[in-house]
Image 1: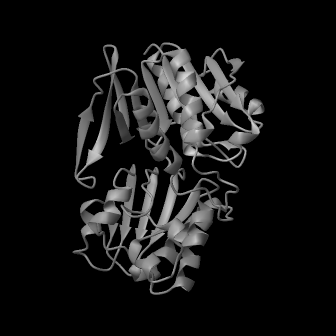
Image 2: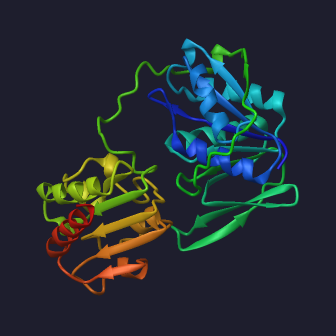
Image 3: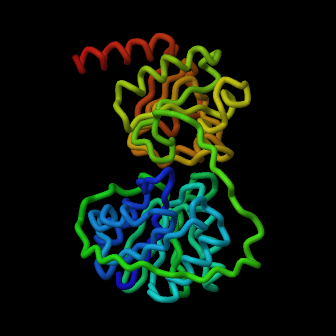
Length: 322
């Protein structure tokens, strides 16, 4: 795949995991893999990108890029893209990536393919697979013009350490200040020692069946037993009831996730929820209603009261871990 350019997203001084995933996937396809990283004081992060397959890293660094401002970042990236002239542009479909990629595509005068779950090389083109109809079906999409601008759902690929040449080039960009209508002064992120749901490998989610906010502690305990790549989530019903903050919501009106393991406790399986977690590799449903729609999506189903199952599962994992 000649001429791939990747947008590496930085948050809190670290490159988001999804950026490594698409970089190593591009390296597997072959051809030159270039990465553009934009931020303030991001020079030191460049070697990490080389570790996952970047042959060339373009660094756009300056105080004006301290926080993500769509117009400024798009202007900067488009200038790098015009220099590199890639055939494919990839980014992780995080909240920022979903905002960034369509704007880049519009700036370059091409189409964008968003929130894909797989990529395949067919000749000189990349064919993207993405869910439609709230996850009920998948469609393969190919962009007509180059560069193809594609965002990929986090956790769709494994970030593999495939060393690239890692040459670093600092790029001086020229911004049209008249186009920048807003400036982000600060970014307030929720304090948590859990990974973001979109990047977590294991998610333990609770729904209306949790009966109250205090019972989510048992899900937090279970998630911690799975290690630092695990976190908790919630259905819209639980969030609407005020039991969890919106940042925990998984679903069409919350976060779209693709973990290796998704445990749904007391979640009936409304279509908007299943649209947000249907691409999980393994789904375990725990619900005392044998007719709950979640069981149609689950790989493993337990028809029982979650207040019996979760403590038993937690105890068993503790026993295994010693």
